[in-house]
Length: 97
Image (cartoon, rainbow, N blue to C red; front, side):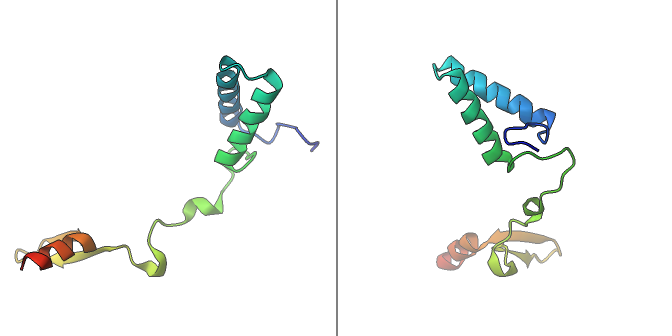
């Protein structure tokens, strides 16, 4: 595929670039520079041209903290129901006692 070919982009990515380009042109940026900035923005946000249905491995990374700890723990109440509290909440409770 030649450099600058936009066939690898999805329709949504093309629409994003067009809308970004129009915004730059409304601000007084030249047409050529607007197009360059628009595609650079789409590439930065979406990781380049992706075919529809393409799988991005980084999208599956979990939001948990390193080491598998989420920062939340489950505590039991006397009635058998559980409540999730953060370490900050637990620290506040222990300082009151």
